[in-house]
Image 1 (cartoon, helix red, strand yellow):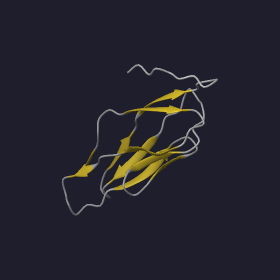
Image 2 (cartoon, helix red, strand yellow):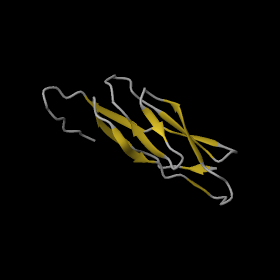
Image 3 (tube, helix red, strand yellow):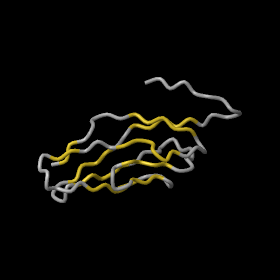
Length: 99
């Protein structure tokens, strides 16, 4: 069984790119199990590498942007679904994120 962080909140800006947006910390009690990561559902530009590092290139604005990363040990799969705040800041403005 794969164990993940429980709650993650990501803050991004429209038109920005994030090569190392977040690294998933997944563990498995069986040391011989290999953990794999894959994008289950996501907006264009979201990817995850073999180490669990999430990237999001050229963020676009949508009020429904969510994504799921599937984390598997070959026997069970767990979905990682962070909360996302997208700033559609105009004219160089910034948003104060309230968590």
